[in-house]
Image (cartoon, rainbow over all chains, first blue to last red; front, side, top):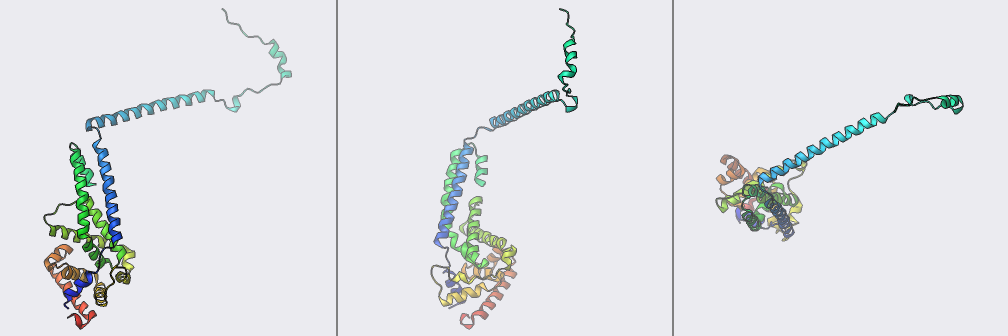
Length: 113
Length: 182
C-alpha cells in the first residue's frame, strides 16, 4: 500500500465524537438565540433624535438633583454650625445657694410698648 | 458582534435582520457537519490530543459564526477553515504549559469510537512523532490532497519551505515505518 493510502486510511478513522458535535451545536444555538434576543431589543429602540433627547433629559435631571442635594447638604452643615456649642462656652451651672439672691433681685429691662 | 453591527446599519429594516439571523443559524449548522471532521483532524495533527482539538474546533466555529465571512467558492471556504484552524492551534500551543507538554498523546489512539488497526496506529503514531511543520505539510498533502503551492498559501510559507518539509517528513516517516511503506 502506498504512503498516501496508508495515511488516508489512518486519518479516516479520526472523527469528531458525537457528544462534542451536539455540545457545539447547542452552544452555537444558544449564542445565536442570545444575539437574536439582543437584536429584538435593538429593533424596538426609538429613533436616534429622541434617544439623544432622552439622554439630555437624564443628564439635566441628574444635574438638578445634584445641585439640590448640594444646597440641602450645605444648609444642613450651616445649621449644624449654629447649633453646635463647644464645651468651653457652655455656661457653668451654678448652685442655687450662691446665686439665689442675685436671681431673685435681678431685674430685666422691659421694652417700651 | 457582526449581527449587531449589521442591525445598527440597517435599523430601518428590522425584519430583514431577523431573517438573516435565522439564515445564519441554518448555514452554520450545515457547515459544522461539512467541515467538523476536517477541522478536528487538522487540530489533532497539530496539537496531538483530543482535548485541545475539541477546543480548537469550538473556537473555529465560534469565529466563523461571529464573522460569517463571504466566500467565492467552496474551496475558498475550506481553505479559510484550514487557515483559521492552523492559527488557532498555534495560538493554543504558544502557551508555556502547552510547549512543555509532549506533542503526541497515546490516548489519541484509544479514545476514538472505532479502534485503530495495528497498521493505522503505526502510521498515525509515526506522523504524530514528526515535528509540527512536517506533520501539517504531510497531512495537507496526503490526506487533503492539496498541492505544494496551495499548502504554501494556507500555511503562509514559501513553496520551497513546504516542499522541503514534505521531503524531510516523508523521509522520516519511511525511516520510522520501515521499508513496507516504500
